[in-house]
Length: 362
Figure 1: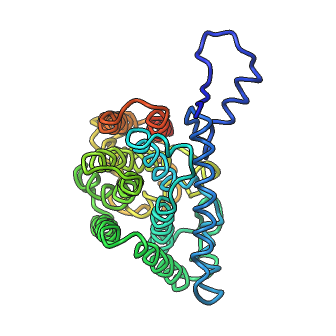
Figure 2: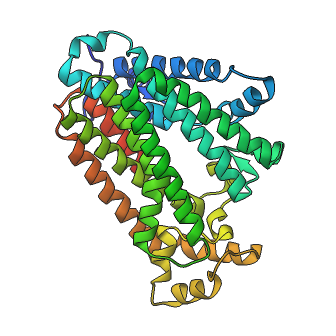
């Protein structure tokens, strides 16, 4: 298969041709640098969408409608994307001839499982957070009520379990372990809500509640593409580092962006008394910013004026800079883990996913 690449900077090329080639290498807003991989990944994402909605048509109308609600609200499908790019990295090394074909059905099922689990966790998170918005739309608990939102999440978990069974006992074990990590991470965050906590506790929380599922996405992609154990471990490590960076960046966006950008109300974590990495670092500052933040952030912040003041202080704090450094450290870990694979357009595409995750931090 002939791979198409964007011409190197400095060569004389037609601007429209460059734009056309750039458009052909875009997937979910990420330029992965290769038109063939982009087309295969786009096709795989559509197959996952179809499988997801079809898989939800197993019961009465209400659970199908409510469980489909957040899926229809959009999102980049970051976790399925991780599955597909990981699978293609492995194929490029072990079975490059298969890159001319659509990805195996089990890769699509694995992506559907991780997206269903992710969506289920969002329903439960919004209930716990009493969120009013999700992905720029009214949250399910706000549109219906908490009971319906919780049941919609449970329904998604059940549907994901049926696909897991098709993938075999080892896939069930992997996903069950991920469930444990997700719940432990969320439980740890809930227990420590309102406490200042520590950087170590924060990292433990996000490792469970976010990085664990993204790590499983990478592992599933590699496993269902025929990776050996060393390759599975490397992809799992790379995807976990991406997951850590992804959550830290999300927490930075909760401080730095407006609701139109994030789809959530800025300062949600402050209102809940959840102190994220940039906040923890800013609280350590021995200056007026740190002193004032220590006065404001003694637990959940309910006064909107104080929330806005804290956000303004945090946006220009040393905490944001230090958090950005940690994100770049995880970038390095992900790139190092992926380096065990041969250089290929597929590996370069996965590296583009890493760079996209980090670039969101500014």
